[in-house]
Image (cartoon, rainbow, N blue to C red; front, side, top):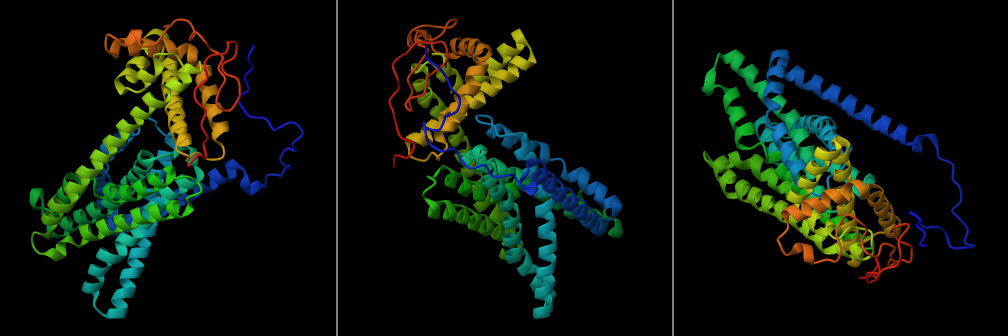
Length: 452
């Protein structure tokens, strides 16, 4: 009978790794605590600064108006991430970083730079223009990009492609725009209080229309360019260090350039804002939207193309590649499990879908020579997670596949659920045994994760 070990062992006689004591500052709770404290302090400071500039009443009005586009933007990025959703903690970190740390860095650095330029040139008006078109794009995009960089470095398993980069960057920029909108809307409200303007002709209404109605996607649009650079770098092989450095830098420079063009649109004349909006912003927004949807569909295609290897090896049921490669079938499987077995079963199926998608993506990177040194370990971990949830997930996915597939589908594979795949004890590319309790089947073709 085949045996199954979810983790690789050292070869016989090979020495194991030397024990290294964990220092107190290396412990997870210390690092998490320091990060939370940093973000909390940044949040308190930035809120105090904004309140000082807008006043209490303007601050409250600014919050009430600035929060309106946030749920829509977060929902869009979460929808984009539905194929292989990352952990909520990554999104919360990105939003908090953008709203607190990045906003604090921007407001302090921009103010300092503008004052320095005004003092050096003795021309305050020119200093404000230069600060908005040159200083602000560099400072703000760098501050927002830091969130993407931190997730890329310290949450590498959750950062595997373009979609991950776009989502983290977009959520960080959404948080930044939220804080910035509080400042602008609160300041506009204070101006209206002094001048007595009310209604649609007020400065508050004009600011709300430009920043919240016409261009709520502006900051996310800029920073998503940086996220795309990091996403492409994440798909590059570990040995291609130059590419992994240059691609994010190129994305950051594009984000800065787009941001500078947007901030400097008023210098193009009376209708400069509308020209830049129509000629540059809208087309780039449409192009990035197409790229996001296309990449999302490519992830689903990867699932359909890569998972059949694990069906042949006995790890997955015959219906699963088809069901897992369709968002409609995935949703139907979760609903089916939730209706018959409860909410916990629906969550189990959702977890199964995420692990299966990660497995397909990992296998694709391995075949293209882009997998890291932990390829085998990660593959076994994902297979073990799937195997633990198979009894709940497989019937739901089988039902979803039969409900959504063409009529000829059931005859494409031998066997059907219930019951295991006819052979359920595979020999895999790296020699470890397959699901416990099975018998050998036809192994899928071997490949090397380091193949160029």
